[in-house]
Length: 430
Ligand code: CA
Image 1 (tube, rainbow, N blue to C red):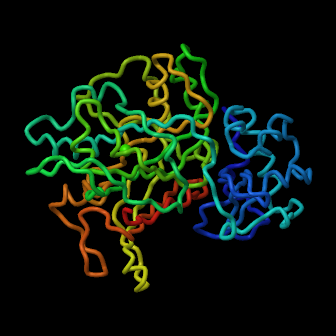
Image 2 (spheres, rainbow, N blue to C red):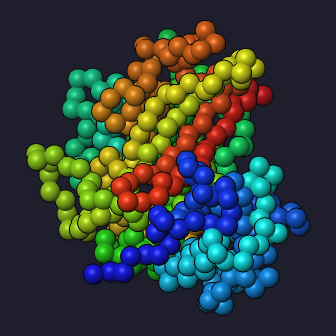
């Protein structure tokens, strides 16, 4: 029997009072990592606690973090999280225990090491060397199949045998709060020749992203028994998509420019240790589904039960002070493939992963209309427009629209934790 992790004890509180507020995303049981702009303009590693950010480097310089291995302390003084991600579970747990002890109620308070989250500018948490986006929601894949191939089986023959994915662009992953400009693309109107013009069918995709921790040597796959130890933590991810460009370009090699102009992620990486109370068995498979090959199993409790809500507000709604409209709710735990299976499959050829590589889950949709994780599905290719409180309708995104995603985890016997938000406003094409 394993000893309960004291950093997950729901009875414990912090001397940072906002961390004890009901409903906060960042109680002391969470302690997610991010990178903010420090006073010298360089990236600086922080930990979210309540509505504050702990300046980790200053905490180390002030010797208030106890029992940190030297290499752990060194990596936490870096300008990105890549070094820390690469060190693995022993280092991660030492840092978590140390930061937890420092922020606990009863410890000496150090308010001088905190900055209000509202006053810091967040940056990308890591230098992302490679980004791969998967397609792990059976409901999403089935919806898309029904829309685009109505006369065929919704799922393609490979779908239940392997986690389908494509290589995305790491260079255009941006942090929440970064405006997204409507891109140009090559489009093919149904009754005319191709044109190069601002995209018209601008969409979001609600997803989760997992950051890779320690990598692997090229030629050495990461197997299922160790895959979770190679995953550092999870963010909310919005895979912005140009549906008109996608429709014209995707055959035969899959997504290309329709997906490469921007991907937004939330700034705080919630670690696998913080997520451990929200792991469960799965993923769900139906009795008639084919059995999985050995290299994609065993999946014990690798499923992460995280819920994400999507909201939309138009520029007019914000001017009129109207609340954002709730669009959908999706759960990572309902996907057909887990992040550990995605990593095992990705590396099954011996493909090398590096610390800070990013894996996207694919659009998170579910069985009901409220579970559809993109406008393509919510408006069913534009045939079911969505009414906004400002009197307008949406089939796809308009300039000035703001898309906000907010995610959280809840379970019996555990403190609720959140992933914060991933938000961005659409700017007009230039
Ligand atoms: Ca996607």
